[in-house]
Image 1: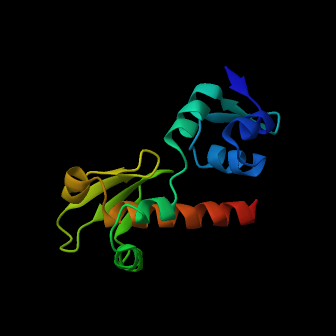
Image 2: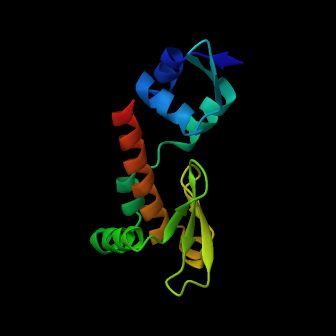
Image 3: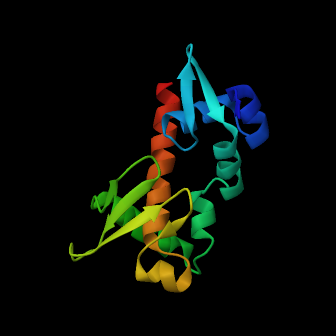
Length: 141
């Protein structure tokens, strides 16, 4: 089953522009037909159920949010996050020997910190990068 961007936006409680951005970034399954996005409703429901990961929500999991944010910004500055696709990143360890997969759509990471505590700096940094990318795409649209 499919829907248009206006209807999808109402269902997700976001703007049609956000739906188009999600479609371009493959955050929802969609195809362009006759110049308009056609959104897969199952994919949209899945995206809505996961909720939109925000930097604030990621930082709220830490007791010292300022330190967590600083560490995440450091990871970005060092280029320690490499985009794999629209919502997955490869996070490279400080030694450069290990790599972890961060999934911003699911809000997960394969690093030991996330496995044991359910939070890590990689997820914060990846969500920061995703937020910046989404903002840049929205400005370009």
